[in-house]
Length: 189
Ligand code: ADP
Image (cartoon, rainbow, N blue to C red; front, top):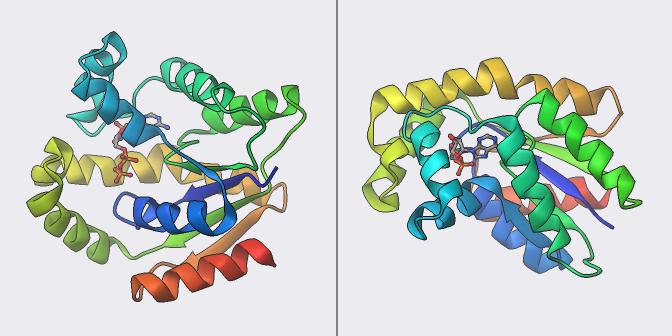
């Protein structure tokens, strides 16, 4: 399987680029943020729980997120691979993902990090708020908290894959097409 972790801070463009990648490589897109939002919309128990964390810009607890992710992976019969978007977001999630993939005789192929400067991120999220309807995009304090959570809890995940020789950085500034081309190259090399 071709299993890619698409990594980067909130607003880096993971969702947009994932759509291109799944089409090009024939992969399944698993966005934990999208799955949580679908659960909120469907008013499920998981959605209710996730909402209380997401609205503040905090992470949903690891155990809940990991169990959800595993059940999503298992929904697909003989997939070509996955794009993990927004997961793993903590070192504990990364460890759990490695162990889980090993248990189904698979592994992460690569982590690709979309690198974007903080000022640009804030500007993108502010613009996205006008169209996304996401409560966590609408409030500058929540945006700041998401950036802080990223730095404190998520950024270390890069080191986890670097230590395995699986990390590649991609410049996340440019046109959507330019960035897609960089990602294709990073995945294919
Ligand atoms: P973004 O990266 O643009 O902030 P996401 O849609 O990836 O947006 O995530 C939105 C929110 O969903 C996060 O702020 C967090 O509350 C929750 N979430 C998403 N993925 C995870 C995860 N892997 N672990 C914990 N919480 C998550």
